[in-house]
Image 1: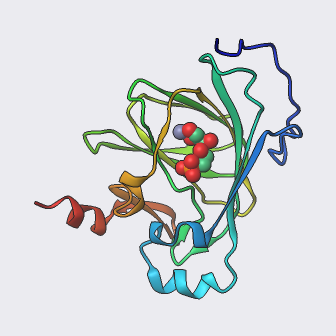
Image 2 (image 1 turned 135 degrees about the vertical axis):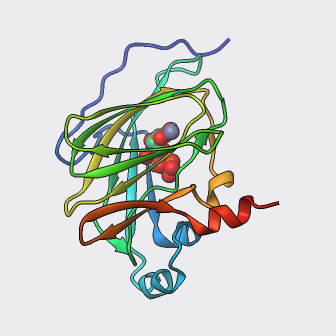
Image 3 (image 1 turned 45 degrees about the horizontal axis):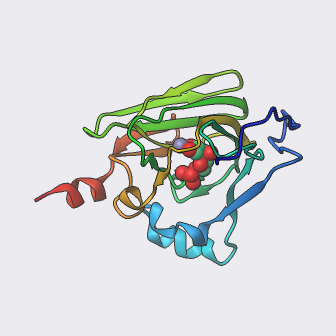
Length: 195
Ligand code: S6P
Ligand code: ZN
């Protein structure tokens, strides 16, 4: 018999994104995802310091029979070359599983990519709500100078596919420039996709 889902409550610090009762806290450092950045010289230089790029706090999931995961992500400010500190990025293994993000603090970009390689980039600012359609991969980056904090809800049976995006990345890169973040083609992606 699956465990029934009981009412749950947790406490979230809206400014920092910390969930006090988090069942799990994931911490990702640069050494966990060196291949995600295109400027490998910049990666090597920063690996000495090996900064924390982001943390994820997940609320205890009160059962195993369906339901939702509830979590916050906190992406630190910083750059690796001209790329911003960002999440690994993934799609949901379950093609019918969407997700909702709500930005609580900071400035970011949410990069999404469909199975047909269409790309959509949305600004994240306090109060923006993002609907990540089922089948769309997603990655967030902090394009500001303070922590980017967002709240996320997604189905417990969604699963995560990281492998597809670990090596060649997404079709688009978001690079820092004097005019702010710029969305450009990822040269590595085009090469990997070529027959
Ligand atoms: C999970 C949801 C977020 C991310 C988190 C870290 O479906 O999209 O909680 O897990 O932002 O990103 P990533 O790509 O390392 O899982
Ligand atoms: Zn997700």
